[in-house]
Length: 433
Ligand SMILES: Nc1ncnc2c1ncn2[C@@H]1O[C@H](COP(=O)(O)OP(=O)(O)OP(=O)(O)O)[C@@H](O)[C@H]1O
Ligand SMILES: [Mg+2]
Image 1 (cartoon, rainbow, N blue to C red):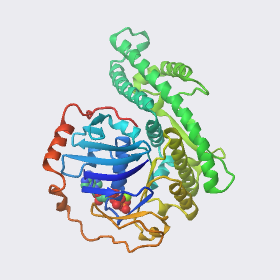
Image 2 (cartoon, rainbow, N blue to C red; image 1 turned 120 degrees about the horizontal axis):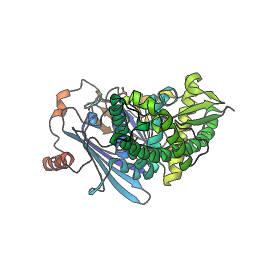
Image 3 (cartoon, rainbow, N blue to C red; image 1 turned 30 degrees about the vertical axis):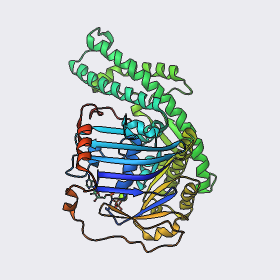
Image 4 (tube, helix red, strand yellow; image 1 turned 90 degrees about the vertical axis):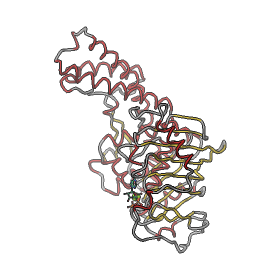
């Protein structure tokens, strides 16, 4: 699959841009703070339904504007599909496929799959467990609608259960002997939590194992040594080799053991929201003991594994979003990455260094980004650096605050009505991933 057109309206620092992409490699060159990462973020959001870095979706709206809109044209083996995601200042999200069909924002990944790679991804190895959980959730959600719905059920049950625990804890009574309405309610939430939680745990275990094998092979190629990379799942509810029923039973047991502590602390102390996985090189935890280079190779191996994993599940190659990674990688790792592109993945790549144009394969397309404007640097070229024009100069902050003549006022008003209306997805809706 590949994205052949991106149109952004009031997204981050883009007032309005429309870009036609090449099927292979697309390089976006620009100085710092011009909009390179924002552009990749827009494609990511149109695939997953949200940002990988914004605290709130509304943070992606251009300052002072009521909403943003991302429109992508995606080419799939079965034909083209148009995707659209809009978010209003209140956080209401609206997603559409082919202009008219409304879908849940998380369902956009049924039409477009992406694998994102940024220098921040070293945090996958050495950052907090929440980073790795998010990675797994986004990864699995991209290929499994069932997983998305379990996550949604789980997150809802978790939030309700935590609120109830807090309330009951303040009342200071033991739920074991309590026949009250609260006690019964808690048991009802337990059931939902355990049902969805066990399925999530089992699926995560399968996927980590699958990714681990693929990452091990990729790592051998990247690092060129014998050390063995492994991803090791560390679920909050341990149940070696268990199926859904066994994990559910273990989960129930764990909650019973923890009940008094949960009432005291007012939070749920076991479940997939406390899972983790570890990167190990020959059994050594890379997060705690790995060198920068080892961590980098491990993340790159995981990204290559991710591409493999998605390709196998959806029978098409995902789109690669590579934010400023070339400068991070040494020559060998760069070559591995470029091999992926040459193997048929479309890639959107950003860089501040015009010099990296020389690394691009034949047919790559080069764009310049400056002050939220994107200019196509002309046609594709074959390997030698063309005279890239990088517009410079002070950013006129006021410039973007006027309406864009290319966006029809009626069009904008209609969209505003829809995205602010009652039947879009509510602000409080539980988000996948
Ligand atoms: N919601 C928003 N509205 C308007 N501008 C925004 C918004 N969010 C971020 N920006 C601005 O967009 C600009 C470009 O950000 P971006 O992260 O895309 O830069 P970049 O080109 O990737 O730079 P670097 O090379 O430093 O990574 C920044 O100056 C930032 O302040
Ligand atoms: Mg950036």
